[in-house]
Each structure stands twice: as structure tokens, then as C-alpha cells.
Amino acid sequence: EIVLTQSPATLSLSPGERATLSCRASQSVGSYLAWYQQKPGQAPRLLIYDASYRATGIPARFSGSGSGTDFTLTISSLESEDFAVYYCQQRTNWSFGQGTRLEIK
Amino acid sequence: EVQLVESGGGLVQPGRSLRLSCTGSGFTFGDNIMIWFRQAPGKGLEWVSFIRSKAKGGTTEYAASVKGRFTISRDDSMGIVYLQMNSLKTEDTGVYYCSRVSSSVSSIYYYYMDVWGKGTTVTVS
Image 1 (cartoon, each protein chain N blue to C red):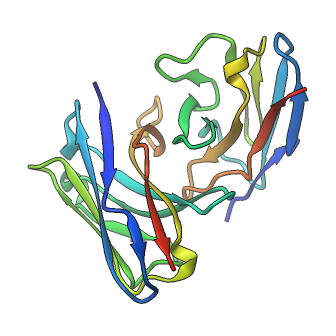
Image 2: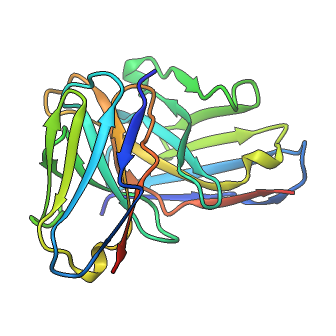
């Protein structure tokens, strides 16, 4: 079973700063990795699929990179609405990472 | 507008049953794999069950934690996917989300969820 490990668990940044979130898989998942954003009381929202493709309607400040076992979600310049929990998810067994909480510093 | 709306959640005693519904609109429902996730309070996302399209056999899969207790089904004519939950346990408490599964750019793998409902809350107590 492939396990996804996200780091850091919590990231404290200010609006306008750059955020870099990491997701590491215990085995290669190729480029089949997705990222989601979840705000309190809301459903997850797809941001990125196939490691680097932005979903429909997702702002260009969100970008994804990586392949194999190491992946990164980058938010180039944080806006107030970006503070949320972010999850990565891989193509086997529908499992997610444990999440990274992005909070306002 | 592509949309999923869940219903049927509520408060139920342990050992009782509940049926959740998820109604889709704005897309060809029958062409899609549909999946249920749940999220316990303060926890991460857990896969519950999915059902393939009729074209792909309409087969179903269940997480080990619910196998034998939950049953997923679909009515493509109505655009609804159901989750029948029997013998409920306190650990089944959480928000249940219905999602549409989409394919990779290469169309080889169906693995990510591009549309989510707002969720319905199930409390077993």
C-alpha cells in the first residue's frame, strides 16, 4: 500500500508570501497525483491533477510539480482566501496524505 | 452547472440503518465512476465506496471498515447514487461526501475527484 506523507504539518505565512507544500509517496506513483484545498465546513476542492495540471477555474498562482515519489504544491503569492488545509492524493487505493494546514502568520 | 447534492444524513442509534443519496446534474451521470468519502470530526478524508459506470461493468468496491455493512448503488436514469448504511457504529460518524471521479490526461487512470458535493452529516450516537 502506497502511503503519502505531507510536510510540514502546519505552515505559517503572511499574505503575499510564497508557500511550498510537499508530498512524498512511499513508492512511485508516476505523475498521477492530485492536490486539494479544504476550508472549514466545506468540501475539498480539486486544485491540481496529474501532478501539474491546474483544474478548471484554479488561479495561476497555484502550481504543482514533481513525479515519482516527490511532489510540490506552490502558491506563488498568498491571498487571504488561500489559508486552508491542503491534501495530496494518489492514484491507487483512493488514499490521501494527512494534510498541511496553511495558517496566517 | 455541474453539481452534486447529498442528502439523507442525520442522527441515528448504533446498529440502525441510514440511506444517503447523491443527486448529480449538469453532466452525463451514467458515464462516470461515483465515489463516497467520509470525514470524521477533525480528521482527514477516508474513502468509503465507489461504483463504476454501467459501461465499465457497474462493479463496486468498499473500504474494509464498511465492507459487509454498506452497499452502494446507482440509478442513472435519475442521476442518483445511493449509500445504504446498515449496522452503523459510532465510528461511522462524520461528514459524507459524494464525488465524481475523473481520468488522467492520458485517460489511463481514473483516480482524482473533480466534482464534490457539500456533504451530509451522519451522527451515530
